[in-house]
Amino acid sequence: MCPNEVTFVAVLTACARTKRVELGLQFFQSMWCQYGIVPIMEHYGCMVDLLGRAGLLTQATEFVDTMPFQPDASVLGVLLGACKIHGAIELGNKVGRRLLELQPRHCGLYVALSTINADKERWDRAADLRKAMVEAGIRKVPAYSFIDPM
Image (tube, rainbow, N blue to C red; front, side, top):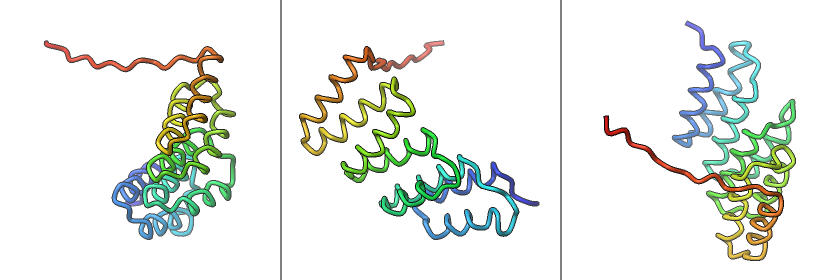
């Protein structure tokens, strides 16, 4: 049996969740070298997640910068999430600006960037993001849970 694109998404995701960086890199390389599978955006997102979860933000950024196509919002979102987890405020703001260019009306981006800045006590930047969100008419969608009593 031969792995396909979906198999590699699952394997790379498992490597990311377990922080098996070297193994994930080997699998990613084997996609085209061994199996002739050309990586697509989802595979690159898995690799950025793998590097980001492991705290290798420089490598994750270099990976994004050397992709053979422009990263989409999902790849940049994974990098932003890693920045938030590891407190990389400068990189987080840079990635956030790129994301806002792709999705200027996405309320979650404003909230995530505001939170990243607030976590580092950059209250002025956090407030500016919330203010920009309000001025643009972007509202945070309230979350809710529903349990069906049957």
